[in-house]
Amino acid sequence: VSPFNTYFTVFLPRLLLTSLPLCIFSMFCDHRTPRLLIPILAFLVGFSFLGHKEWRFIIYVVPILNLCAAIGWVTIKQKYPRLIFINRLISALVVIGFSISTVMVIVSSHNYPGGVALQKIHVIQKDYAQARVHLDVYTAMTGASRFGQLRHDWMYYKNESHSLPTDYAVYTHLLTSTPQSHGDYFEIIDIVYGYETIRLKNPSIIVQNWLNLFQNFDLNHMKEFFESLLPVQIVIEPKVWIMKRQHF
Image 1 (tube, rainbow, N blue to C red):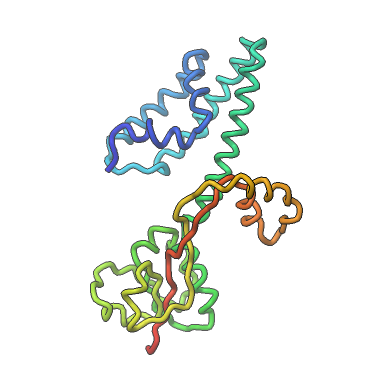
Image 2: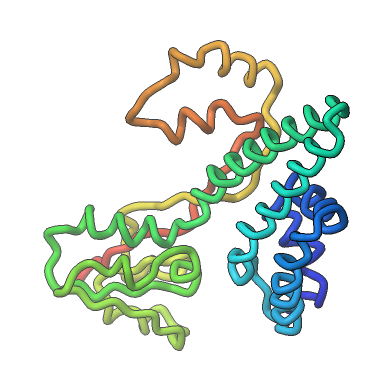
């Protein structure tokens, strides 16, 4: 449960980034903007009455708010063409906003170890017939949806009532965040890593990575290439363990 103002003070600034001040400016300088913003504000206020809040609930307002920000920028360019510094500052903010969004996308790509684990088990156990796979809560919350349940001869379970290690003995495989609880009956066959935190890189490392820009370029490892250019290091740690029944 989040406070009433969370969408306005936390999620919108994260979603809009540098577009937010332009959006606010346009509301007062262009008569078209209020007609766009009033329904959006009503939508946000309505959803704010719900205790459980997530950014994905309001993602639909972002294109309209970005449109309002664009109106604000055009208004500044048309009414104040001599303010060259302001226009250049706005251009810089757009580039900064795009860069921050790119970093956030790359970081977010490590947020779904459950989905990756579900994908992996179909690859490393492709010859296994009639598997009974249990997905724990963390796995299901981090990307392991029904869209990833690809085998018609496999059974997938998300039973949350198990409390003892013996309760899991009916399964052939586990996707779990607590492998220490299943060592008596299962063995680890793979580990999936996920996002833990970010740390600022040493400036010398950043410079070195940019100097070796073309040497490090590899079409087969584009994700790693872009991560090497970031000013931050994405720290990943083991999140989901793929386990197989020792004797079934």
